Image (cartoon, rainbow, N blue to C red; front, side):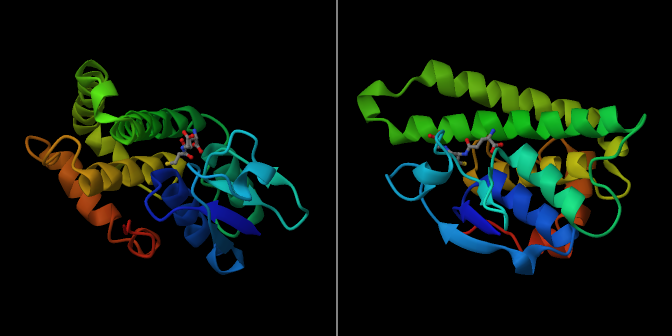
Length: 198
Ligand SMILES: N[C@@H](CCC(=O)N[C@@H](CS)C(=O)NCC(=O)O)C(=O)O
């Protein structure tokens, strides 16, 4: 399998955490292709976003949710996308993590525009979304304890990305339960192996 990736993409990190958890990481060949330049990524994904995974059958899969579910199906161990009653609380957690990621990446994109086009209004709205979701996760932090699943992985990657980019300063301030959970979760080998690097 080939993964179009960048070392700073939190969605790529989520996919690679899943690959490690499912015992598939060494089957993934990585191709570093920026979505901001014209390169072979466009051939595999018309939306030109990373992550994009080309399977051994030659099918290009995107976005990260689809890739994670594919790897979950392919790999070993317990399902990271459970079926049945618990599915919805797992997917809800994943959606909270994705919401933080989408807001954070949107702030990063703003930084790519010429300075005269930057919008404080847009950036402030995204920061508000991040802070509100972090507050909600602090309230629900007890529900984060438990076996690894796509909800916990996505929240873990979201917190790692917020810390890496520093969008909202020290996010642990005033959120002790979430900070304690993250400290434990980020010590997992899958999280250690995928830490962001510039
Ligand atoms: N919902 C997508 C988001 C992927 C995404 O936005 N990736 C960013 C890099 S972190 C990207 O490729 N951006 C390029 C663009 O927006 O044109 C997913 O989960 O895979």
